[in-house]
Length: 111
Image (tube, rainbow, N blue to C red; front, side):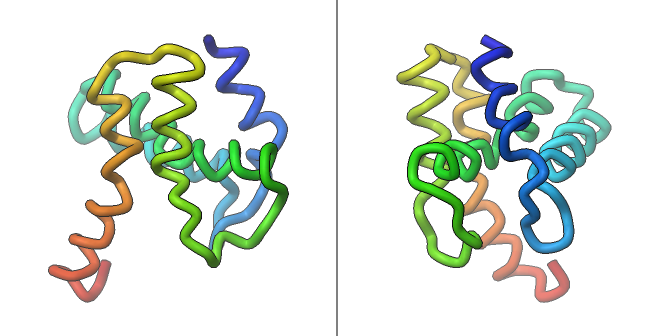
């Protein structure tokens, strides 16, 4: 399982998104989730939340993340359908993180 997932981070983790690499963003997200909740399952979901971008790089080619290519659905489908992850908390961390971020931006101008 980890070999399939880690392949994307080894291959594309150094790609920058804003001011941070994809791998650093995943590590920061997973670490913060664990520090806030002490829940390793939510930490895994937070780590993986943007894996859809990395899957897109491999399957569709490299771009600059400007267009919304529904990376959350791509990541969800990959984890659930292609490698068989069933934990809804992990999967929902991918599927709903864009909506959660949009909500936070709406209610908090400093976010």
